Amino acid sequence: MIDATRIYYLVFGALTIAGGIIGFVKAKSRASLIAGGLCGLLLIVAGALMFDHKLMAGLILGVLVSVALAGQFVPKVMLNRAPIHSIVMAVLSVVSLILTIGAFTRIK
Image (cartoon, rainbow, N blue to C red):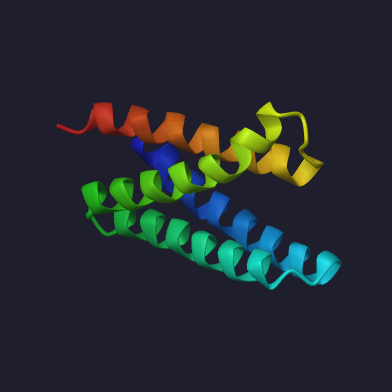
């Protein structure tokens, strides 16, 4: 579970950065670019920390970013006012939270 979480953070981070860039290109949204870039970078750092034997720091950073992203996108999906990118980000955030909780339970 820990290895899967580690890799997921890296992939999720890259997808989040890509989403921020797409939001900027399509809608000229600087907020998307900044938020996507920052959150994506933090997720990549979380994954890298886990590779560098700083497991707890990586998991804590990963869960904080995942909660923030879920808090942004899940309510939009629940209110049925979500474009497809919001649905994707909500699902990715919830999967990240599930993996992180699973990883926390595996720490000895």
